[in-house]
Length: 424
Image (cartoon, rainbow, N blue to C red):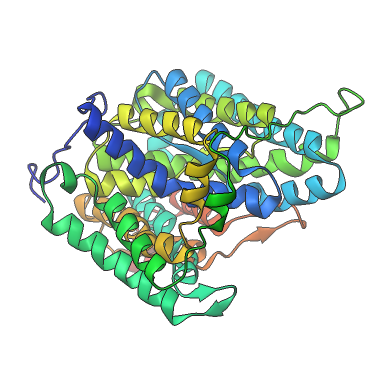
């Protein structure tokens, strides 16, 4: 890849002209909206609050990291099971305490990093580990994208398949053949095209839009109940350990962002600030009634495709998320985007993340004829993509991505540089 083809259209600190800025921010909002709203729908929380907390959390993250990293904070899927259980048995005050405890874990780890530094990162995350882990982050979402792109109400539906394929092909065409302003918005245009196709074949229900009010206050919740503050230790014990899962994903996302933007975010703004930003964002979410938040692969994929890395654009998406959380008809309209469309776009977004991992391997000339490199990459890929997960209880479940990352770190540290058979 030539330097010119990899040159950013807008780099980290560059602010696009207003209309371009608005379109690029809207593209990010559309890309993350479905997944961010899906979490509260599955758990039983208010989607408007989740949208609000994702926007506020992102702005807090940008503030804490001094505007030096383009990361969007969306609702985390890692906490769905314990949040659902707590909401049904105790209520939101318990969920809030669990969400806040997740943020506190991030702050504690950030404090540890402050005193230990980040030199250890290069030691435990060499390219032989980083490349496969980044690939896993993208490819592990392939099953979810394929399911959304083929199924309706749990059953295979040909119309869903057609819409997803049309969305994918349109996104590819927009990437390859558009230039100028429109050339910066291939994902947004792909979503719009897919939505129109879905509307034509009857996959969109607009009744929720007509029923929604123009102004609609999100249903904010509190960690307090009618008795005031009541501590729920079970909520903390069930959710705080899962922060280790999202911590590993946080490191993986930083690796991807560092790779595609050409900026070392472990160095600047530094891991202590990115962890603090994530932790503060989750604490803020818990205080207003939202789920725990984390950085989003969808937005990373958008940046990889558009080569727009501007923090201003991410901040604009966050601001729009906050505004849209109060405009009932707009948020309702976006919520009608069917899974067929998000799945079709997901094939591209998740794939480009995996391709970024492959580029790490190619750029660093990782030799897989050497057994050590092969023994590290092979289990990372299969465990992560296959989601070989560790379930310690009904509420504590470490994902395949988390296990693959930890295993890759351990193997890199303990395996000899050269296999015994290769010394002969």
